[in-house]
Length: 150
Image (tube, rainbow, N blue to C red):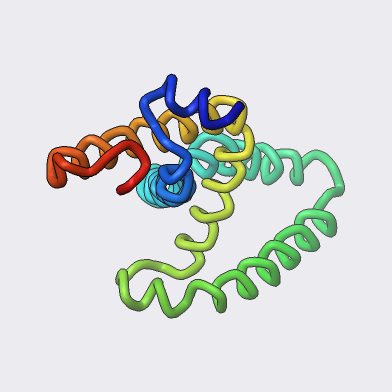
């Protein structure tokens, strides 16, 4: 069963708690990494939003889409002001724009969800590797401890 599988991998059932903690730590590191990446590089703004906004402004001269553009701008302002309030405390501590911080968080969440088929196995492997490392460190620190007695 499970115990035999874990023993084949060099772990014990008592290591499952640590593995769950390491899994969550890997997820948190990935979330913060994507958030920081989107905060500093702003890939959506540079690659998607600015060119589309430029095209819409050019199309406004030809097509009567001024009302739709103003409505979209107003809706984006309302959403961003609500998000800004949620990240205001953190933005003050980091000395960055709260709107930029909240937009980077949302953008990072989108990228994490798009890459979930790749990130989930990576998190599982990271948790396994960290648990094995933790197990090895404990065994070196307490050489007399037996199999599942850590």
